[in-house]
Every structure is written in C-alpha cells, then in structure tokens.
Length: 147
Image 1 (tube, one colour):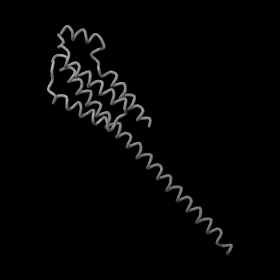
Image 2: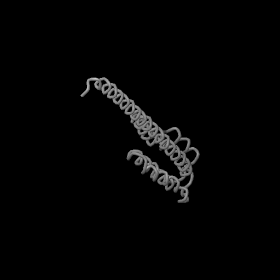
Image 3: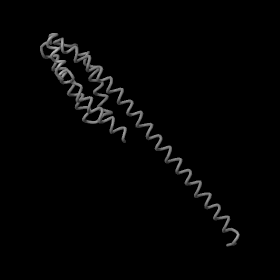
Image 4: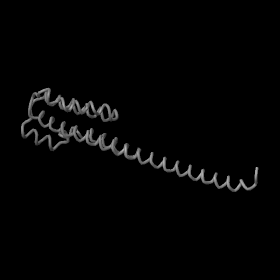
C-alpha cells in the first residue's frame, strides 16, 4: 500500500465516524423527543377521560341522592367512560371507577335524602365518593409523567 494513502484513509475514516456519530445522536434525540410527546399526549388523554368521568359521576350521584330510580340510559355514559378506562387505565383506576358506579347504583336504590340529611352528609366526608378514585387517578398520572 502506498504510504500516501494512510493520511487520506485516516481522514476519510474520521469523517465517516464523525458523520455516523452525528447521525446516531440525532436519531436518539428525535426518539426521546417523540417518546416525551407521546407520554404528554397519553397523559392529556387520560386527564380528559378522568375529568369526564368525575363530572358524569357527580351529576349521577347528586341525582341519586334525591331520586329512588333512574333511567338506565342516564347510566350509559358513565359505563361507557369506564369501558374506555378499561382500554387506557391501570387496574387500580378501573376498580376505583367501578366502585363509584356501584355506589351510585346503591344510592339510587336507597331512600331519598331530605335537605337536612344532605346538609349532614356534606358535613361528613360521605358526600365525596370520588375522593379515592381521584387519588388513584392522581397517582397514575404522576407515575405516567415520570415514565
């Protein structure tokens, strides 16, 4: 081999390694950026789902406190939201949502509350059936943010 080729091959090799390093660094950075974006989208999607469930369950619970029966169609939206949670959420969140749904149905089956009874319920923490569900959701969203 001609000794004049050695510096040329060294320069070519250095350029190739430098270019490859730059390419790999760009690829890794882009993958990380995409991963962070997907996690943010997933977190936003779950936040919206949990907010919708809390709003729907709150309306149904308030209705259940003052009515003995409900149209089954009124419960459909809540159960549809639970179905969406079964696709996206952890088992703990699903169990929490199902517990809220059972409590709402049980409340419909119990006697109506009078205004003084409602006032007493507000004083106790019994009127916040979504507290444990909200806590489980917060923990899941926090873990998702760390992921």
